Length: 428
Ligand code: SF4
Image (cartoon, rainbow, N blue to C red; front, side, top):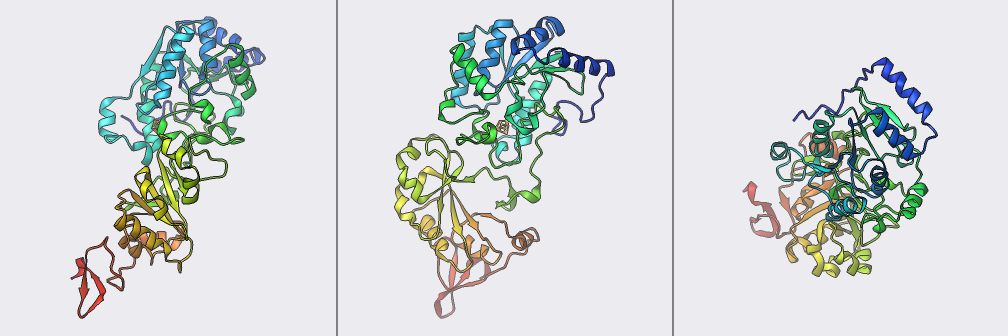
């Protein structure tokens, strides 16, 4: 697998005549409706030489319905990344039979690539661009090499980057991308679905307005950008298969922007904080304050999505002790250096309740605190303080050898005749 190569080279090398042809096409079909654009592409421009790529996501039914009207035998490629919601896989079958699509083909990632680069299936968490590359871009690139063009469901309203999307694009390897829905608004989509009584994706009514792989998709709040739930919290908006459009592509978050320090390195952080407007039944990878969890306990327990707990000073972990196994991560807030309540919460979680998941410190995490935090069982740190970050990067965290309070989470021995004075067993 060539990890660094996108689907096409970065430098456009268009055939000038084809470029002019595309400009003319866009001029001629600028006002054509979506079905007309699709017919032009399938019947006249690239007969037998064009395919469609569909995510079978929130609004895929519209373009798939158009395809069923124009040519139900058109090859429709579905990127079966291995990371989809079960609901998406069901939806593929629903639309296939409902619309009479005769040529839906699942594309799978190369098993050798998966074994080599993502053996544990968690690459999405640490390096989503590479994950998309293995699971989407490469399988698609192989199959699209056999076509002169492909049809996408992208629309102008979806993101700022797509705001100037034309009906026809020339890729830098001289293939044609056709975007029949480029000018559709959200209202047009809804009206079309209603007009033809098209079924919604099962997650749509739960706030999933743009749906991709399960680990990288979350519901959006009212008024939020429909794609805001994709790769939430990461500097990534596109999966990589549309790298070719206007050069505005997803960039990996640089190492210096990563703030989660865990297992000896700074890494990508899939977690976010609970926000106003969030729904208990649909949030994913969200740290939920203790009070919010208690208020919506039933919904959180019923939800299938990974959630975490946020413990602010004064909140009692004892109140959620019976539900700790529900949390994949617990974030303890240390808002000020002099506030030691977080240490007590960490010890309670580890020592009294035996919590074994990720325990992270958030807030004003300072270099001098980290050894004490570790001693209480904290194993991840969200570091925004520049001096602390520098100390970590220089491997210069403070070394504390003597402690006045024993803890159960560390191996320690009493020092001399003063049993309350402890020394890390590693230094004896
Ligand atoms: S969307 Fe997420 S899980 Fe799917 S391929 Fe991309 S990074 Fe991987």
